Structure formats: structure tokens, C-alpha cells
Image (cartoon, rainbow, N blue to C red; front, side, top):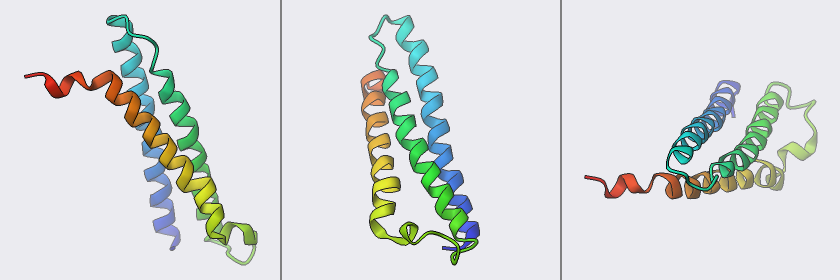
Length: 110
């Protein structure tokens, strides 16, 4: 992985965090108007998982600059699975479920 691609991937993961934050703000306002239960808090839980994933991606991107000085653990497949892929999947799934609960009425509107 080249450093430029790693940096762009890090920015892509950070854009997911900002998108979930915007959805949390919109859903909080929408839920308060229609007196819906505060399900928007699930977005903040999803943001924690996505932030963990972003942090791991940033560490791995930094390790691509000096691969000889990087700890050997970073190059292990299980490390990326546990600290990047799994939290990313959990965060996106939580935000998908909360988004569906708040905004599914848009699908049936004409």
C-alpha cells in the first residue's frame, strides 16, 4: 500500500465518521419533532466503532512510511481484522439499522 493511497483511505474512513455525525444531528432534530424515542444515540455508538477503525487506518498509514520501524503486530492479518474491518462493519451496520428506523418512511412516500 503506497502512502498516498493509505492517506486517501484514511480520509475516506474519516468521511464515514462525519457522515454518521450529520445523520445523528438530523435524526435528533427529526425525532424531537415527531416525539420519537431517542434512537439517534445509536449513531454515536456507531461513531465510536468508526473512529476506532479510522484510528487503526491512520496508524497503518503511518507505518507505511517507515515499515522497518513499525511493530510486527501491525502486519498481521488478524490485527487489521480485529481493529479495522470488524469495527468498521459493526459501525456501518448500526448506522444502517438506525437510519432505516428513522428514515424508512421516505421509501413509501410519493
